[in-house]
Length: 210
Image 1 (cartoon, helix red, strand yellow):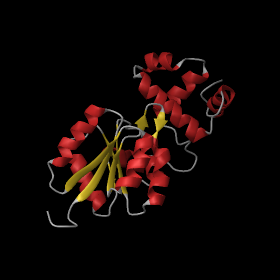
Image 2: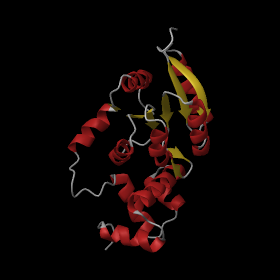
Image 3: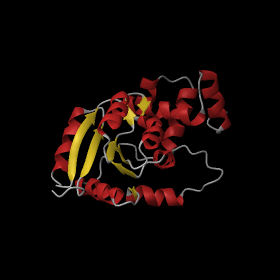
Image 4: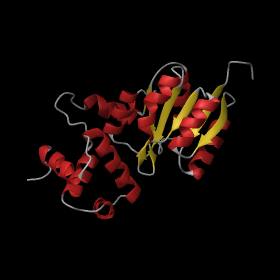
């Protein structure tokens, strides 16, 4: 490969099997060089600093922590860095927050394999890539009075405010406990919730409680 024609890529996901799949998929393209893998947000910060990749393929959820909180500092440290989010979260609110924090691409893990390669190519070409369905839904969302929460986040907030535990919310909504924990972490960040009283106040303010 001629110098300057390849892309140095860092994979950041807390699931080994996901990283292995991404490595195999991207390595099939001669332009892609996987230079490292991060399984935690701490590793992500360290490897981004030490390896100076051209692109990070980034999951949002690392346990109960959101990797989106690290995006601004990563881009401040290396303005040329490109970031593509690859996540299970198909809510418009997640995509909006990710783009607001500076990511250059956002797609869903259920996307076809060629969608990831297309996203990488688009982002490394200097453009922004957004999963097509999310792009349509994002365009249709009103801006202004919108509280910025997805329907699922509102469901989680309402149940938590009624006193349900994370496990009970997961059972009620028929989703995984990990999903509920991720939603709860994002609700704390987005709404500035630091206590149960604030959680209840937020739910009442948004009309989720009588």
